[in-house]
Length: 151
Image 1 (cartoon, helix red, strand yellow):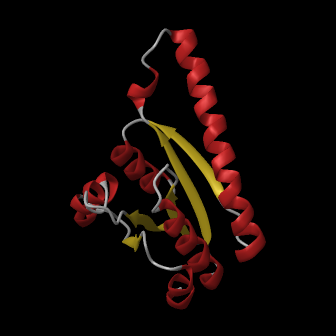
Image 2 (cartoon, rainbow, N blue to C red):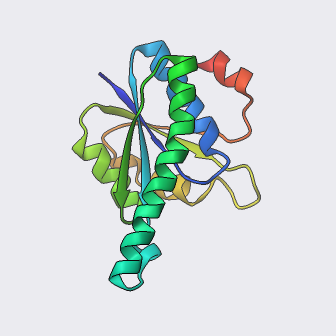
């Protein structure tokens, strides 16, 4: 089964990327893998404190994932899987793509602010020529109705 890989983070544009991935998966009989990445420098404390903070971050990610997963299951009839990795975002995304041969498309949400599309979109498009899969970039301010029309 072809899967859409979408990145779960705290950005506003993440919502449209999730919607797009779920709708495309529903219309094509595919699946969705939701990847969340914990940056390595986030837990440079004493070992015990870092472990507790890492566990709390995993719990926060899982709770965030469940909100999207419920919508995907209820509205799109797609049962997404969650993958949590630790490290720098771009290498971890590339590793996920290489380790899961069913991933067929990387879906990213583009920011609409003055800062451009966002650091992840900028970095991933620099690597686009060497990726084994295409990238779909979903505008962060695209309406739900427009997303439904194009998927």
